[in-house]
Image (tube, rainbow, N blue to C red; front, side):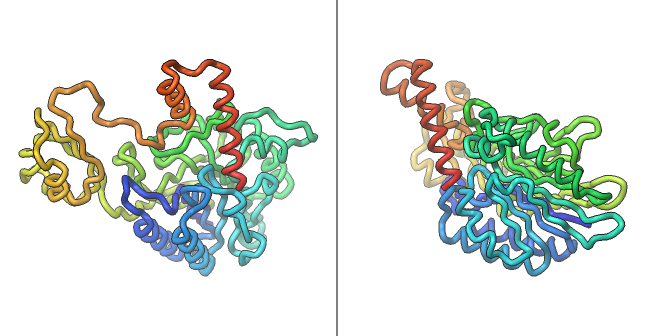
Amino acid sequence: MRLLHTSDWHLGRSLHGVDLLEHQAQYLDHLVELAGEHKVGAVLVSGDVFDRAVPPVEAVTLLSETLSRLAAVTQVVLISGNHDSARRLGFGAQLMRPEIHLVTLPDQVGQVIELGEPSAAGPHLVFPIPFLDVDWARVALAPDGEPLARSHQAVLQAAMDKVRSGVARLGGRGRSVVLAHGFVGGGQASDSERDLQVGGIGQVPASLFAGVDYVALGHLHGPQQINSGPGGPLMRYAGSPLTFSFSEMNQVKSTVLVDLGGSEVTTELIPAPVPHRMGEVSGTLEQLLGHRFDQVAKDWLRVWVTDQVRPDSMMETIGKRFPNALVTRHLPQGDLSQPLAGPSPEAVSPMEVANQFVTDVGGQPPTAAESAALQAALDVVLAAEGRA
């Protein structure tokens, strides 16, 4: 049996003011075609379906239409990510047609979806683990009523304990697959992922996922395999299907085709359609207007104009030369006072913003007590957003 693994659609997101919904729809058309072409047993969606807790109507409509089209050719297993509202995304899960499995709440952890007809090899088992809000999950997943430690590692450990119990109870010679959304140690982040830290702890070790055959990860936007150690499962981030920041411009966006047959699980990356290549160019205005940059003129670009004096009508001229320029900056040649690439807004954590605000207003950084109060308030807001 084959599966398709995808994640981090972020429906409703924009890129430097450009609405991406049309390009996201093109990717989802591509995904439906792949599901039919490869006759996959299921499409696995590892979270961050929407870009925010309350997505625009057009994004909700696109998801509804896509799930309906996928259900006509295969099953879909979809979990919520840290950008999604668990309750909103999971609304109506019990009313969905049987081919659609939405898993968004901590008390659904341990649920198993069996793929394939029972046979001598047994069915393949899929265990979805949605993004676990720590303060919610540490109570919901507590085995003896005593809340778990306040960390992602503690709640994911409890979730995987439930999965391993399910594998021991139901597993035959079929494969076991886990969907999860989080930051696993060893993964390479980019500028466009939202910080997962709650109570100061964000990453979890790959060793938590021992005992299964494949782990379909979501959250990091670069497609990559995670080293799980000797005897560990094959673990992979599918990555986002579109580029969401200039830190991702060299990534090859893709969908993972997972083959559960044979002596071991194998994967193949199928490139996703590219609406526009993404890159950056620099030079004086005269150089930028020359033929040297003709081949990239229609790309999504970050443009650095290096004239010693800011040219007249710089923005208008660059806009005509590079109609898809997303960022244009004047940086005189040899000026090292500012880096070419600063962090994107997504790369700056809410705590950094709050701390900088206190510093700017009060003239000095927050005290330890003030930082603790800010962190506590932030945790309440993030938890409420995830549960809404």
